[in-house]
Image 1 (cartoon, rainbow, N blue to C red):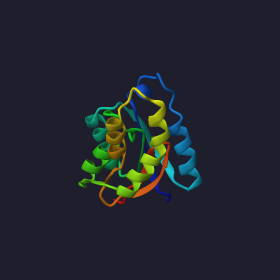
Image 2: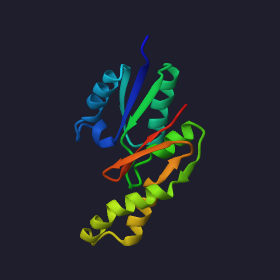
Image 3: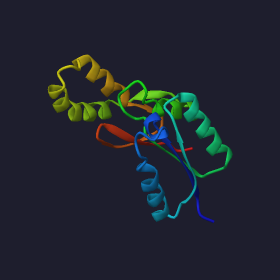
Image 4: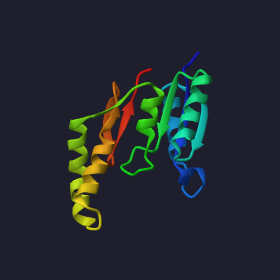
Length: 151
């Protein structure tokens, strides 16, 4: 029997239909290529308790892999890393190497967005570099790193 996965797409903009979910179908295809059966694909808004409920649901269904998409950015509503860490009983830790890589990506943007302070850019960079303890960090796409957490 193949492994089964559950996918949670996060983002109120996706939940309300203002933004079309392109990540869910893409992830389903990648999982299939790996021989992993997609058991559940859910979408929730940006509220931490809604993401926590989706994670609980998937764990209760006994899926082997839970994949989340969204909520890894620098803004206040990007809470996936913190919620997943809490759900797994882990604390967030600063990955200083990741912070430096994100800062290198953000530096050219900071020069163009003069209405955003240097302190705000630094805070966003630091937020994105906070990862669940024990997580493997994947190279950022844009400024958001992928995170892999073993069970």
